[in-house]
Length: 259
Image 1 (tube, helix red, strand yellow):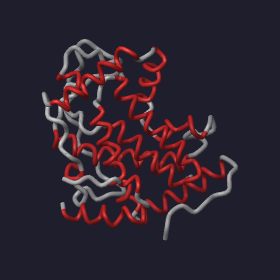
Image 2 (cartoon, rainbow, N blue to C red):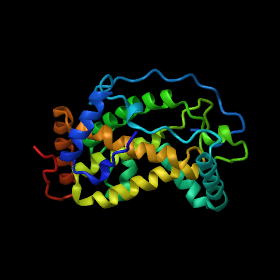
Image 3 (cartoon, helix red, strand yellow):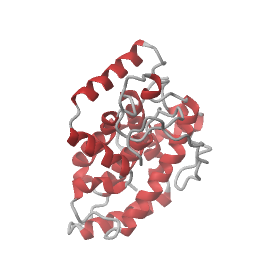
Image 4 (cartoon, rainbow, N blue to C red):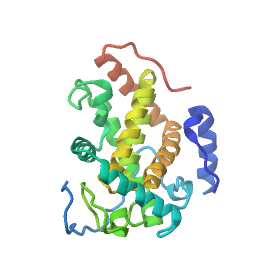
């Protein structure tokens, strides 16, 4: 299917395209990971999962054993050989901190759930939407994790037995939280999105996802975010969180949602 790059579109242009498409369709590395049953899908808060089928918004991943798949595995081997202890520590920290406050590096030490309860609540709901949309796609594609396919890899983050590599849930959370924060504080958009890219790349540093997994998460995040942005509930919550965030950081609030 043809891919749509939502990143180059404004929300006002991306939203009609999204609505048309949707209407038409921690333990560190272990030798033996503990088997866990699939989680029961959570209910959505902003989106309607019966109208947005995440699996239909993504291309098929590279087939196991294909030339592209081999290139992606080779990339993970190169990362494995060059990653430093500091990079490993950062990747593990990002794995453990799968929420909106991973962006403390952009906003500073005062960016905490205690100081920003409204922002924290929005972040929690956005992460929940990831668990809904991401689970749809993971179950549909059923792609093995890279270390499940290539036993010579040495991942340094938590392992799973379930083949659910595509898309990356952590990367999808990171991009959804980033787009939400960029809507709340557009003047910091560049720094926020750069952090999102770094957060997603750390899944590869961990050795638990391929490049295609995190790229799919980026693409899906723009689609899900466009859907959320069309809902009055999300507009209201983001406006409240934006006011809180600017107030706590001592910056004048800016209206960022087009009405």
